[in-house]
Image 1: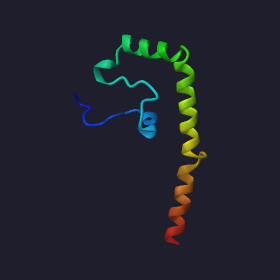
Image 2: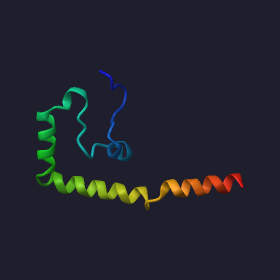
Image 3: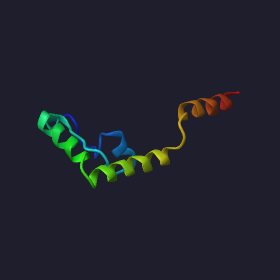
Image 4: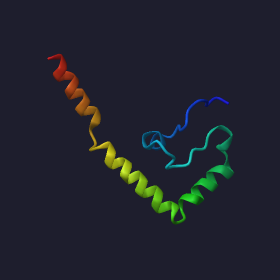
Length: 79
């Protein structure tokens, strides 16, 4: 196995600290695994739970433009 010692590899799951979206890793990435994950995300209540979790996560991340804000802070620090 190439992936060891990490709990999650999908960015939404890493940021949330829990599984929000399915993670298909290594041998799990196959037609059957992809279809199963997609089918599960299309049925209630998982569809709504996943959507709400992703929306909540997006709200915690703040407004778009983080890279520009960081660049402005960095420029202000060196001036």
